[in-house]
Length: 365
Image (cartoon, rainbow, N blue to C red):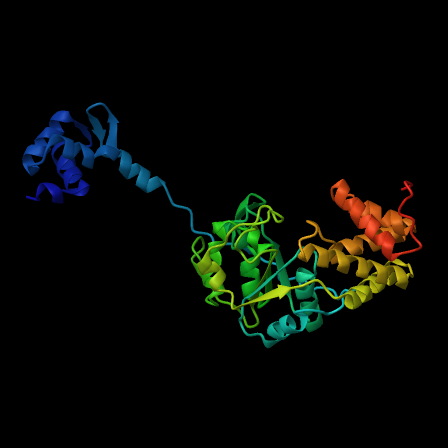
């Protein structure tokens, strides 16, 4: 006779069916309890799947279910990929190499896994430099714009409903791993601790997809480059609101950090001249004066004299506005309206001192 703890459902149902048939009542169960030396609750627990009412069990119920039910065959997991996409960026005719571009290009060209962190002020060409390095090398790049909401599903991938069917959709990280592409994590300092799902990938070990049971190893040439306005320590002056203090273990996995500065006035002038050519205007003098104007503002900013700065991106906005309005001052005004009134006026007055052809006293827009 089995011990109480060893009594199985099969032993109990076999005894009951042999002695009492398929329709069982409480007295039958108590008889079985005496036979096996178990308590009534123990026996009831063993046959709970056969219960058809209070104090009643039917031993054919479960058997019929087992005979009629057939589990659906496990279908192979469908995976959506971007195999037919061209992920090599176009060359930008306005781009002028400067700063860390040559070093970034060398790292990408080496095809050695070497995670890079690029930090610097907003609008100084961090992202564009990486994209143009890939364009020059004919390398694929997958750019992911990070936000506080970015999580593992956004990065690694997850199941999606496609035409009524559940399909696994590769995230950008998995795509980059499989293709041997450069993974560009833009604005990485906006991320939450959910970015820690990239730890093994930052070590060059690939990733295990726990939802599908597959391991993805990095293809040759795969690398990670992150850009940020801070060094992952938050923004003390509040200029880059929303940036977070990143986990030290996460930051430590980046092999090196480049500090990106704004281009020199000479380089910036060349950038603006190329942009002018692209938008159909010719004004080399205006380009040079804008570059000098921005340089003075940045030096004043670095000395603590002002709280705002003119980025290379904003100078590009001004050139495009100039192509539309054919008016230097108006182009500057509409593109500096984003600043507070005092800062805006000081910027405009400063430009007036550099350009004798512009009358900053006029109120006309």
